Image (tube, rainbow, N blue to C red; front, side, top):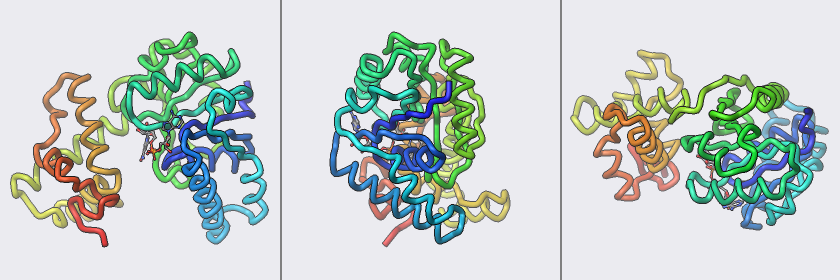
Length: 284
Ligand SMILES: NC(=O)c1ccc[n+]([C@@H]2O[C@H](COP(=O)([O-])OP(=O)(O)OC[C@H]3O[C@@H](n4cnc5c(N)ncnc54)[C@H](O)[C@@H]3O)[C@@H](O)[C@H]2O)c1
């Protein structure tokens, strides 16, 4: 199956990036969001990011309009997915919402359409079980910013078929991304490895082992990480880090994933990182 016709549900941070790379690589994309303003903002962001790629000479100038012409927008999910061969869902990380959206996709997308989720932490097996087609449900976990980052974790749920996996792996390759096959366990590989490191860096702050700047310096200069764990946590959003740690703590049942009390305190105080101007560091 070629999956020429795609749909992306949710036009926020991740959805606009996913629509961008699909359209740039020749796929038709129906970009869907319940909020028409988010659709306008997403289209503007995609145009700006394509301009940036033209300036950096990573794409030809003509590629911009060709990509934008392949994107249509819709506020009605049921109507937007009627012709889709592959749907990528990128709505907020709430289990009830994912269930509702996958119910709609299952009822209205063609019977042979594949349904992928960009979820960071919700079980693909569980999402598949919300549909009548669990063998066609899979995780496509992209990374932010999508046009820049070269990885997709392709997550196999308990009932995901080999054919579904093969098609999605092919699509990821066609987007110039490296697809890594991962099994459906909480946090997949990326967050399973990353979040305990971030959490431990926060414990170091809480226990006064070192100042935040110095903890990041140890990891950038000593371990050659491009960004320190606290800068990265501020970039991801401290609320998002807390949510992911809570899911891993509960679902894996191991206290090594318990969120640091300082992380909780900062989230409670509304210090969520870059997006609020204050996290472990201040942003003007
Ligand atoms: N932000 C990241 O760095 C990142 C990285 C990897 C994966 N993810 C995952 O990607 C998903 C989306 O995250 P995001 O950061 O892009 O969120 P976001 O809040 O930026 O965007 C979500 C969009 O979904 C729309 N939406 C809400 N309900 C909808 C519905 N019923 N139908 C259609 N659209 C609806 C919202 O209007 C919004 O525009 C989440 O599952 C998240 O865990 C996020």
